Image (cartoon, rainbow, N blue to C red; front, side):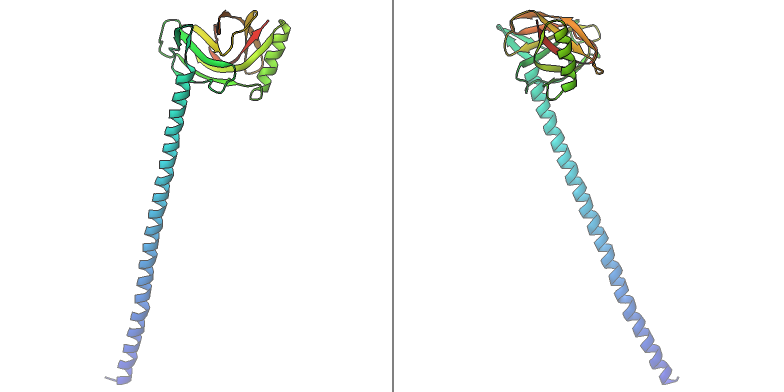
Length: 209
């Protein structure tokens, strides 16, 4: 056999081997890098989900505490407590101590509420409508408003427990989303103002004439 041919064949074979090995190593490196990146992405996603779950649990706990504080009150030695499920928060109100919603026939399936206290700064349009309606009957809006989304299948009573007693004739003005107002009768017992709310989403204002 021609020795020149053999040497040339061996040289080509060695070169091919040298080229293949780095390519295989490079491919393995890329695969390892992809695996590492995927693991990091998974860990990051899991960490984010854990943080979101923790934030959600903390929020739910906070709202449960605020609801408990907003749906019961002791007035004149008597404990008033709502029997309608839902979320209620009047803890930031300067004038409202609690909001007690009572279904006519106790706990009725489908009864629910979502209630928050609102200041004039937070709901300027609703306060504007209420102030105009109050002026029309010779009254004045007192304190914060009650923003409420209520469902009472068999009707019921709402009690706004105030931090201070009122002097004078008391009415409640109901303001709809579009600004329409309705004057509701109310009864007063010390710091407790009772009225009949409507089903749906309305904002309620206490008015003294």
